[in-house]
Length: 171
Image (cartoon, rainbow, N blue to C red; front, side, top):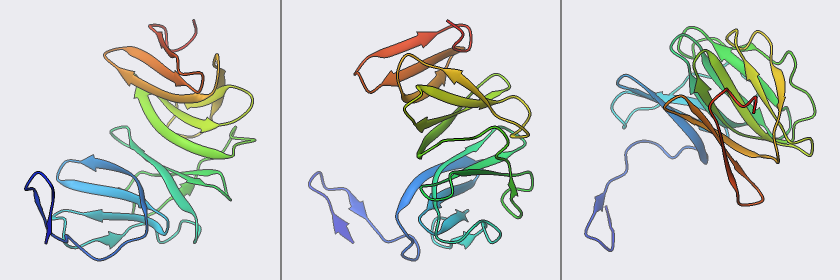
């Protein structure tokens, strides 16, 4: 047990896994992206690797689920996106249109559009409207992280500003 300063008790809840970078919860199941793949748990104590056909030794930097498709963004070496339509049992490369990336930040979704933020010098993000079948770039004022909430798209930039858009980032 670990006793925190505020008297919170923590207990180990599973095997030691590689560094965790992201997670997504779907119903009672939690998926985590680590330095050694994607794992899932229902109870927090047993973890099952579900990324057996993803490239080895790649960091799963971002995960997302849009209701039918799960997305996994791998970096820093491969800079590839994979999708799964069977809850992580199998993964398929979904990289059409993704070029020149260095580091993925994360996914968000607004309507049927899934956005992928990444570090780049072109001040762009990627988005897909066909479950990762192809990705399109969209220009931003700077580079940073994109979020969606209540029909709005928000962008936090490296210049410490927050931008918002009510038209999927077109203006």
